[in-house]
Length: 93
Image (cartoon, rainbow, N blue to C red; front, side, top):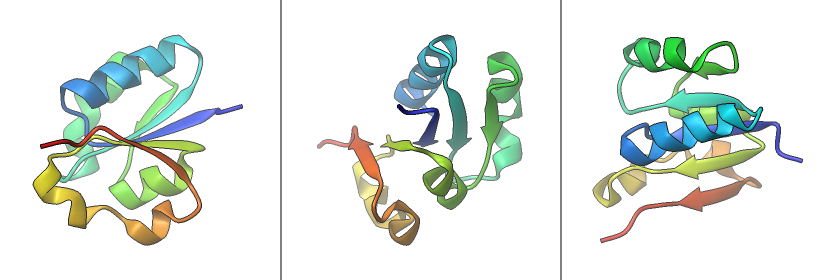
């Protein structure tokens, strides 16, 4: 069973998934294209089950990873850290 959800991109989709995951009892590792400290408000809101990290750390930490970034940024995903992971991709045109 998935215990930790890694989220790369915390816009509308990523932050909603983070809230739902925490409510379901999962740990969440959040990341964005900026510094992890920029997520401190969301992490505080989510509580002890959430923490901020770099995209590579979120990918390594997640039993399941959601990539929810703009399509034009797909080439910035941490490919090596995602190897062997189940990744849900919300990107589209």
